[in-house]
Image 1 (cartoon, rainbow, N blue to C red):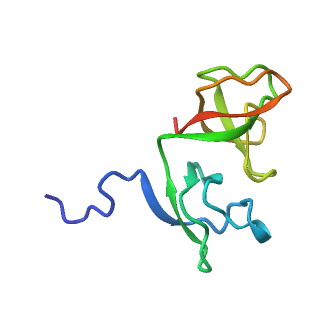
Image 2: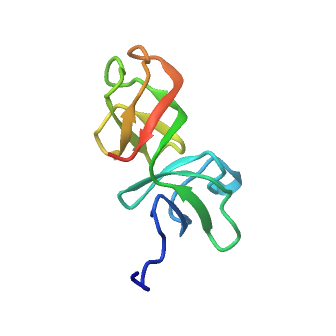
Length: 120
């Protein structure tokens, strides 16, 4: 077996998230917050620590609060992370980072919590 494998599955990682705005005090990432680290979508499993690190999940499905800005969100709709508005997942691609796919529905112009597949 290769001795240079750092993470067996690579779907749960401890990474520096200090550049991602979260819902906590001073914009810290909190457990449950979605985010995108450069182009890697995640949901935090732990709160960001004093060194800027958190354990994150990079695949799977999470119940997330979404905003149907661009029309009706239906299962399979491509979802985006809005870095200008912490924790905002929406269906508007302009200026946002690709996050994953909706697995539930939200009516155009409305918000709601639905399952979202992390990654693409």
